[in-house]
Amino acid sequence: MNRILFFSILVLSISLKASAQNPIVPPGVYIADPEAKVFSDGRLYIYGSRDESDDYWCSYTHHVLSTNDMLRWKMDENIFSSKGEHDAVKASDALLFAPDCIEHNGKYYLYYCTPQSTHSEGVAVSNSPVGPFINGTQIKGAYEIDPAAFVDKDGQGYLYWGQVKPKVAKLSKDLLSIDTATIVEPLKQEGKRVFHEGSSIRRIGDWYYLVFADESRNKRPTCLGYAMSKSPMGPFIYKGVIIDNMGCDPAVWNNHGSIQQYKGQWYIFYHRSTNNSQKFRKACVEPITIAKDGTIKEVEMTSQGAGAPLSAFEPIDAARACLMNGKVRISKLATTDIPNEGLTQIKNNDWAAFKYIDFKNGASTFQVKTIGAGAGIIEIVIDNPKGTVIGTCKISSTETQAAFNMSETKVKPIKGVSAVYLRFKATGAIPDVDWFSFGK
Image (cartoon, rainbow, N blue to C red):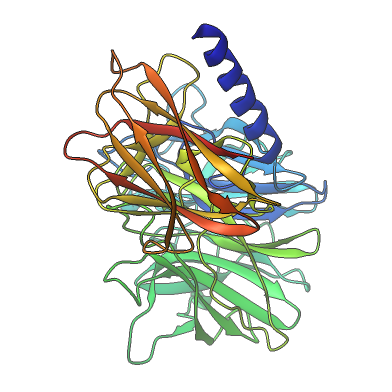
């Protein structure tokens, strides 16, 4: 048993390091509101808020993720804090909501925000994209959350922010304050309100793109929508939804993110909820295409994210499920080996989707690692939740809540790339799912 356990951990660890996809943050870490930027060093950086409790939004510190290949991600911790040992905001000890960061003339400017009305928006400066950012100072005149900053080709800077109604103003030459006389509402919302919060700004050619949390569907802001303009001050015209995270978790409430080009490919960065909570959100990414007329076609959530479809023959982390139905959720596993997350609190008829998996020239077996008490059946379904059942795998209970089982079954031969749905059947409790794979 110990030898098998060690081998399982080793294989899974190597697999995750080599092809880590959605979500792009490690187990137990929750970074939301991803604002992606490419700086002069050639790396892509993601600045976001960090969830740490189900009792309140976000936290008092910011981490930053970075990559040079969209597969392997490095996390630098505590680059900016509003309280505690590395307090950089002497005037406030409030929580830190979604940030943005820009590079200008060799300096990096972190625009942060808090829910505190007397110090809503601020800016801190560093010589490095990973901080430390110091001397957080208030930006007077900007009194709502979610800043987004942008310096145009002519050197003029702009700050965007707002809730329900977006706002924009010109930044001062030192990028530390705004000209309050220039504040306008840049987005036309005629008939149906779409803007919730979470401004993000980009220029592509002659077009300016305003990306934001879009509340046009689901009676909650689960979408990232976008609007286009020929001017950074607007008017921006709403164009539609880029991605909708509805279905990623039973309790999902919002979305927030950005678009960014890296090494010739455009991506949408967004977050998905976990733990059946509005909080505990994880950053994810999907490739997008910008048409000749500048419009962006809506894309779906996937497990593969920025890379190729996941290999059927390597362990697939169950926490990579991109859609879930029923009571099932992604949360920490009760395990004595490496810290990990997986599918938990599973009930009869629940299912979880993994898009997409590459079976290459064919697979004929299915293996799954489950943890904890309970028993049941996993139906392996392809293409859609009511698609073809290619196999059923019986799973049984373990001696202790933290112990695990390895179960295996034959499946109908399958080739090529398919979406895979794990559908659960049981009359009682069902064990948690850590990972699964296929064999030839």
